[in-house]
Image (cartoon, one colour):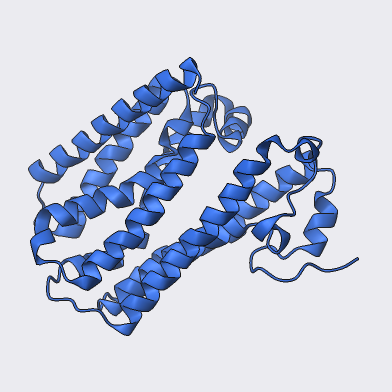
Length: 291
């Protein structure tokens, strides 16, 4: 690890410790009488704090790790409140979230070069919106992801509010879906990481190894499956059906925003992407079409 990255890692760890402390303070001192709202307020406070650090570092990628860290923060708070009363359903779901969170955070860490890096989408937004960028920075890059992740976890409040919740078919199925989704991301991201220094890819060719041979976006598929799994767990804990809106929103965000934006860029940076796009499924792994 370079000295520059080591210094940046220390800084980001300190930043996220401060973010966590701000969330804990707001959680314990702002109590509206509703646990879900209490969590939501703490989540918003932490989002504002990370936004402040994004401004301080002049780099919106300060928020990137928040996506994977905040669900684990929630698990810690639920554990603090009632871990001695947890049943198998609580532990299994906590494992699924923790597995996803630590894997994704590790992938972010190994791929992050330091403060010299900012996500290409944010750079595009800076160039596109100019002096109006900070409104987009807060609303689209910071606030919207916070809201969609929180909405996607609302069903779990019904699980962790009930210390007597037993395992049932839907809770088991939901966790299986979430873990399978995490494994999809694990294998897809590992291939992507290993191919970073592949001379052929550096010449502008698409990855056609592992899951990428059968799906153009296996990592996004894994993310969709993870959030779908949590939604199913919530329904298994008798959460109302409106809690499914989070996973539906995740699906829409990836399919109608993230994937098109990414593939539009790849058409410019990958010489064979148009051919790859015609032969390989967008999301669901399928045998590639033969020209």
